[in-house]
Image (cartoon, rainbow, N blue to C red; front, top):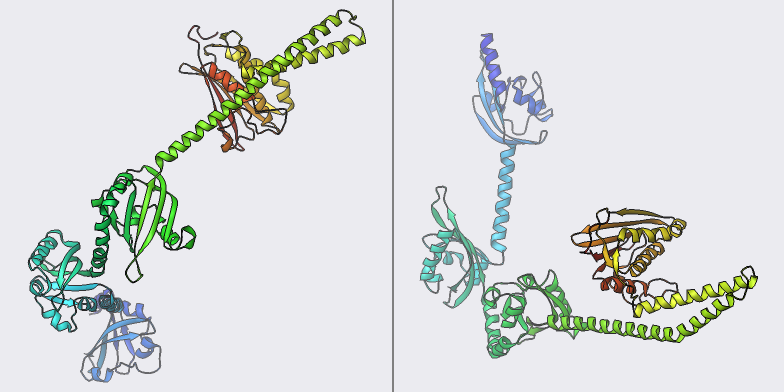
Length: 610
């Protein structure tokens, strides 16, 4: 017997429902584990204290009926544990003839919450169904409406919903009954119909254009029960199209023959006019645009709203107009089109805004021509500068060279008449040295208008660069500039003027020195690239501004404050290198230094130097 009781207790403890046994004096005799989990251990206490923590009988308690042999079942919310239970109470006769009450508490909190959420969602659905601004319906496959919202009744001029639900859809709703059959074939084949244009009849028989979207309703076996969806009244849109069609017909030939892009939209941004000029310039075909695309899909992001705001402002040509606004379009193929855009708002008969029209003029060729013209003008100006400098230096040479050489010869003659140890001899030599320096300066100026005509010869670039670095080593060290040189061993010689190349290398190293007033590093490297020799000078100086990069090889251009520098250094260097069939490339970023790469063709007449 004891074993059977234990087995029964084990069974009761495994149950999810809470079970407890109460004597006729309301003392709890037994509680299974589920009951203890809900309310805590309470065997030996009064049931109402265990369940509600109160000293009085539960409000729903019908113990007297149960003890008398009755049965009670009720759903009860118990705030103490914030749960809802389905309570079943049964009488249980004891061996001594007394009656106990067996209570089974099933936790239905989750189910009640789901039911409550479902009711709330149903309320929300009904509210949305009734108040949405478009016509919503549910219909059977046989052709009867099962439900419809107020907007659909109003659209079709029905006041009585019951009357509307009784109509035959094919006969009383469709202008052409065969369209109902066509609609059913499409929706059952595809499962849905989206933006299907159709004509319905109002209650008085007048046609109304409708944009219809719907999908199929199936039962659990996949059988078609009916259809549901929305209908949007297109009367206003159709009226707008009719109003604009007159103007469209009148201006169509003019618009279509215009080489400029002409486009028009309604106030919602739907494209209603798109001429051949727009097709050619922007790449969108009229059949893909009119009635199918929104203007925001053609403009860049946010451009449509910006243009409309500008049109409503008096600052861009007057309210309702936009005059000659510079604009960039992206063609359908991704090509960028630059031009001028003008637009205006179209008003209806009563002054209301009805749409907008815009004209885009492609100025690509004109802008390209203007750019080319500016480049030619800059080249002409540069040529004029160079010609002026050439004339100036030639005149200076002719005017000064003869007297200078006369002075030099005189000083040389005087030197022979004064003993070497004489103090005047030293002064004379100093004067002669300065005269020689002046002559050398004239020679350098002449090199700008007429480069040094020294005969070209096979030249070892590594040796030439190394000589320049040795020459400037002391100056660079005094400026705290560290030189790192890396010369390739397998470097072909070049056929060049050594003096001109020395001048180029000297100028670039001097510029690097001036670019590092606080010290830094100058990296110099030579390397062979295909059939070219690359000489790379890379400094860690102040760098060159982006707007100056395209001007640094122009004559007279300089960023240095020293008035002794007239901006001829790099221009002369560039001319020397170009005459040798090479190029000078520059890369720079302000604050990160500059790299000059001199490119020279290697000589085909000699092997790499040992």
